Amino acid sequence: MESGLLSQFFNLVGSPVGMIGLLSGLFITYRARRSPRLAWFLVALCGFAASLSFFRDQFTPEPPPLVFPLQQIRDAGRPLSILMLALLLWLGFNTPHYKSWRQNFFPSAIWALVILQVLIFFKSLAFGSVVFSLLAILTFSGVVLMVRLGPARWLQDHYQFHLGIWAIATVSVIFMAVNGYQALYDPYPITFVQGAFLGTTGNPQHAATLLAATIPCLLFMTQMQSQKHWTVFWVVMLVGILIGLLLTGSRTGVLMALLSFLLFFRQNKKALLQAVVFGGLFGMFFMLLGGQIDLVFDPAFLSKQLLNTDNTRAQVWAAMWRNFNNYPIFGAPLQGDRFGYGENSWLAVASTLGIVGLIPLFLFGINSIMMIFKLNQIAIRNPSYTLPTSVVIAGLSSILVGSFFEGFLLGTLSFPLLVLLLYLALGQYLLELSAGLERNQSSPYMASNVVSIIPQQAPSQSQELRP
Image 1: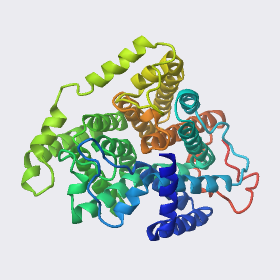
Image 2: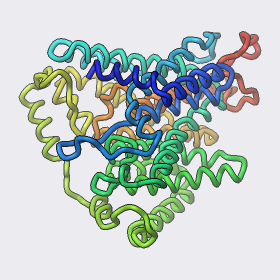
Image 3: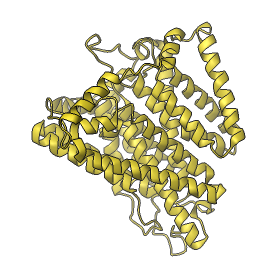
Image 4: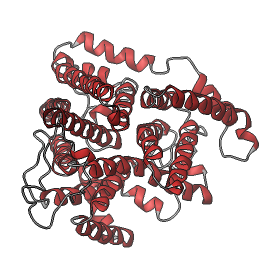
């Protein structure tokens, strides 16, 4: 696996597609030093690259090939995401460390995840593959450091906050554009798993998680556009993402999406009612008429999947609970050279790390929930913060709920992990912003000046961004 990753990386760099991608990435990174939008676009590209994967099982040793150049890009998904991570780290290290009005760029929830990954590292180092353990902890550390030096530190004003939301939404735009391109040539390679839509991800659940996690940002973009054509664009993209989500047949993804809508419009009953009516009509049209408009999916299968009330994860959950009961303190012994996680982040930690691992995971959950409640209180006290807080509340809540059905909290370089860190960083920015507003009754969020993430010279005393 380790030598395979290195060979993939060198094959990527040596290929024509890889050379073009590398030169494009270097160009974007260089220009991003003076362009905040390009910097955040690089974050979006990293998020998309982190979502690239294959579907393989005992019946499908090799998935159907994608059209050029998507096949080559997917083949190099892992090294490509590491390359994007390296470019963002370089950009972060080259960001001047001018004095900031902010006191803390990372919330406690992120540090709890760091502790959890350290525990995984030590156990896998002691009983599994040493090389894989080192690669895993270095990759995770790189992701956390990248977010700390880059996106978290870039969040200094309202413009950067909007760009952070835009970057997350752009991941789903790239994902749908890429898979739309594939569907024009041959939709089978992105729908071959029982007729469900998996796109360029590893399975339909992964595709659903990506789409659902970006919905709050798409809703935010539809609400914040001053120009009508951009509003139409984001509304069309939102409809497309909802269609793609239903095509996955994922109940977890649909649950995450419904929760996002409810929490995003929680203080606007009229908009919430409109969203419910629209969603109901949209779902009825999709299920009843979808098969008549020549879409590539099986309406009967998808209806059965979405409306199925059986717990298809019961056996996996029972096995993980059994492991926890048998090894409650440090978790079950490692089988093989690395950890394998079931379809529940919390039970996976209980099974593999026991109570020792559950402690930092519970701290992560408690701190995340506390952030959600604090953001809600901010919106109640100051209605002008309703939209910014709503997007973080909806996004963070949907990911927390999804973590009970998928093991993505334990990832090292994946889209769910990256978007989770971004939502937490965005939430921390709003908390500090509100605290500064309450202290000084002045808000950089409402400031008219937009300061670049990398100023050409140190800002003067009057230009420094601090509450």
